[in-house]
Length: 78
Image (tube, rainbow, N blue to C red; front, top):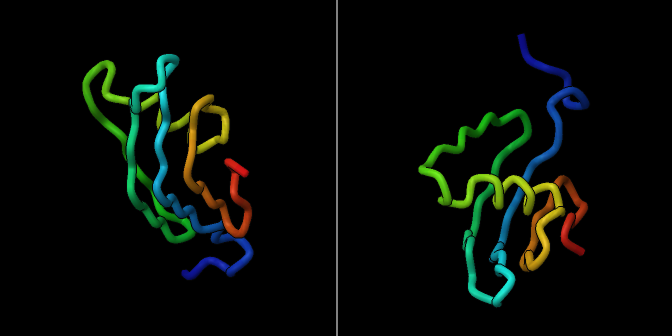
């Protein structure tokens, strides 16, 4: 059974996302990612790989984040 359009959620699009650490060194770089509404995404990697940094950047909470994180039509980094 298909979900009604309003229940499907919003797309997530990242463009040129980067997060710089305290000394200006880039600790996360993601050129592009596009997820349609309703998509599930798993993130795995070793300790220190940037998983938490990515989640903070997606939420607009990462200091030193630059680029675009668009949830629907809203840029969370603007």
